Length: 223
Image (cartoon, rainbow, N blue to C red; front, side, top):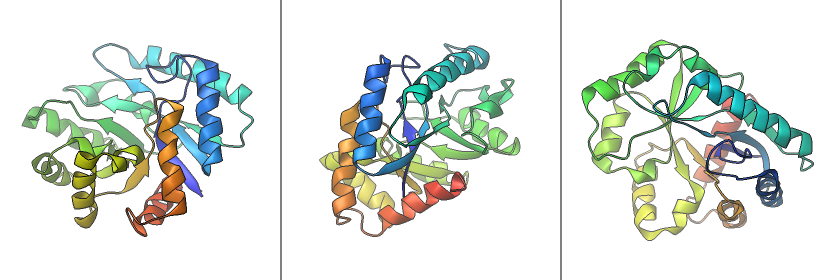
């Protein structure tokens, strides 16, 4: 069973899908390549939005897509949360975790340096009972990943990044170092699911790890 824990499929919830038609096209493509469950993780930027407004927008989009979904794919609520100073102190932060779990998907800032005040937010989030998943770690350097590993976090790579020579070089290194926990689409458009077409047919790129990563995704959703 293929489970996708990182996607931007909800209509008008962020800059992923602009309307219901685009969202359904993403689901149809995902279904075609074997995805059975998908966590909808629209972006949450604490500096632009409140959790209350975000949840209202997300849940409305979730209900709209769920009502129109005929693919058989089970959709779960979640969020991709940008890590910022003070994030852990936000009321209702735990509501951004994956549906019925304590797993929170975090996106690191794009800056090349992360100060200790920012990184300590990870510890504070963990102290609330949240288990942290760092999104698309192939975007970050080895030094940055080594720093994150000190915080006992889980990690995710994007499937389509396997076809980028630069990112594949990093991914291969991270896989060999056993720091990767999940693989997901991070779909913003339906094309991002095409990577699963090749991974489903052949595991040559990441070997048996593909099944391991999918089993990890199933386990956190208790499937």
